Amino acid sequence: MRRIWNATKLDFYTGRSYLIMGAAVGLVLAGAIGLVAKIPEIGMILMIVLAVFFGGYVFSMHERNHSDRLYGLLPLRKSEMIIGRYLYTLIIGVAATVASGLMGWIISRVQGSPMDPVVFWGVLAVAFLYYFFATGIAFPIYFKFTFSKAYIFTMVPLYIVMLLGMLLVRNNVKNGIQNAISLIQQVQSFFTDNFYLIPLIGILGSAVFLVVSGVVSTVIYTRKEI
Amino acid sequence: MSNALEIQNLCKSYPGFKLDSVSFALPMGKIMGFVGQNGAGKTTTIRTILNMATRDSGEVHVFGLDNIADELAIKQELGAVFDEIFFVDSWRIREVEKVVRGFYRGWDTALFAQFLDEFELTTGKRVRELSRGMKMKLMLAVAMSHGAKLLILDEPTSGLDPVARDELLDILQRYISDGERSVFFSTHITSDLERVAEYITVIEHGKIFYTGTKDGLLDHFLIIRGDRSALTADLTGQIIGAATTSVGFTGMIRASDATGLPPGLETVTPTIDEILVHISKGGINKHA
Image (cartoon, rainbow over all chains, first blue to last red; front, side, top):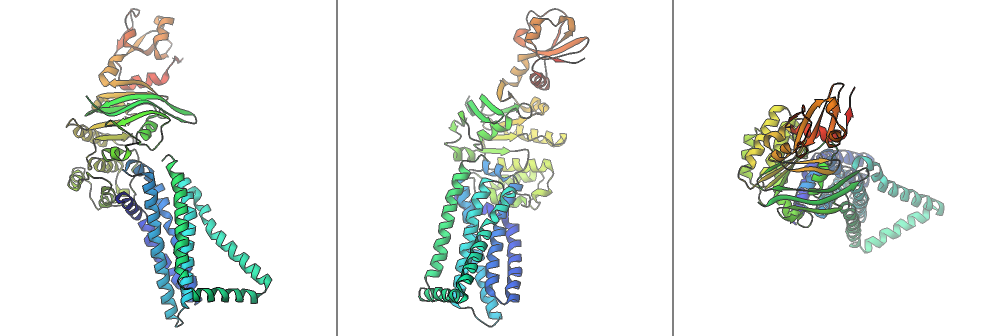
C-alpha cells in the first residue's frame, strides 16, 4: 500500500502544474459561464469536463520527462503504478466534483434561486459518472499508446455523450415535445421518491468504470515494455 | 569472489535486432565497462537487466537473485543513471528527494544532502535549470543515497565535457572503494574505461565478443602493421578488421596467433579504441 501511495504522490508532483492551472481555469471559466448563462448546471458540468482534460496531462508530463526510465528503476510493480495512477485520478475526480457542487451552490445562491435538490444531486452524479467514464476510456489508451499519439482519441467519450444527447433530443422531437417533458417529469418524480439512488448511481457507476478501466490498463501495461 | 551481476545466455529479439546468448559476470566491488558501437545491444541488455524489457530466454541474476522474480528486492539495492535525466524538469531538487525517498527502505536524507553539497547542487534549483553534468550528478546522488550496491550507468558520459567526465569517473572510483559496491558502465567513450574499469565486456551485433579483465583484453589482441607484400592469405585469415593502403596494411590479430608471423611485421598492444574499431570493421577494408 505504501508503494501505491508513493506512486500516487509521484503523479501529484508530476501533474501539479497542470492541476493548479486546471483548478484556476475551471473555477474562473466554468464559474463565469455558469453565472452569465444563469444556469449553474452548465458551470458544474464544464468544471468536470475541464478536470478530465487537465487530469490526463500527467501522462504527457511523464512522457516528456522520460519517466518510463524512472518507473523502470523504482522498486514498484507495474500494477502498483497503475493503481497509483487510478488513485490519483479518483482523488482529482472527487475534488473536482466537490468543487463543481460548491460552484453550483454558490452560483444558484448569487442568482437568488436555489437549485432543486434533485437537479443539483442529479447533475453532480452525472458529472461524477462522466468524469470516470471519460478517464476510464482515456487511461487504457494512454497506457497503450503515447499521450501525444492518443490524445485525440480520448475525446471519444465526449463525442459519445454528445451523440447520445442529440439522438435523445431528435427522438423526443419526433415523438412530440409533450412526451419529452412528460418523460423528464417521470424521471424527476422517480428520483424525488428515491433520492438516495442519485449518489448511489453516481458512485457505483463510477466505480464500475474505474475498475473495468483499471483492469484493462493493467493487462495492457504489464505486457508492455517500458 | 561473488558476483554483483551475472547474465547467462540472455536472448532478446526485436525486428532487425537480436541479443544472442549474452553471458558475462561482474564481480562484487569492481567496475565493468560495457562497450560496443551504437546499436550493438548495450541499452537492450541494460533494459533487460532492469526488467524494462522482457527477456526471451536466459538468466539474469543480481546479487544472486532473479531479476524478475525478485525485482523489488533487487531494485532496493540498485541505482541507475541514464544518458537523459528521468526526473520531471519542473521539480526542484528538494522535490526529487520528496518523491523518490518513499520508495526506498534505505534512503538516507543526510547522505543525500552530503552528496548535494559535494556536487554543488542547491535544493531550490529546478531540474530543467541544471547543466547536463549537474543532471548526471543529481541522478548519481539519488542512486547512491539509498544504499545501492550496484550502479548501472547507460552512456553516462556522452555529451559531458572533459571536466564533468573526469568528476564522474572520480565519483565512481570512490563509490566502489569499500569493495562491496559495483558499477556496470556502458559507454562508447573508451578512454573512460581505460581509467576506471577493471573489467570489460565488448558487445558486437548483439553478441559478446570479449568479457574479462581490461588487462586480459589488451593482452588478448595485438595491432599488426607491415608492408602490403607481407599480407599473405594465411595472415589475412587471422586478421580482424584489416585496412590496406597502397604501401602497407594494419589490422588486429589475437595474441595467440602472433607466433610464427613473417619477419618485418610490427606488433603493438592496442588501445580499447583500436580493438573496437577493428572489431567493427570485421573483414578486410580496402583503401586506395
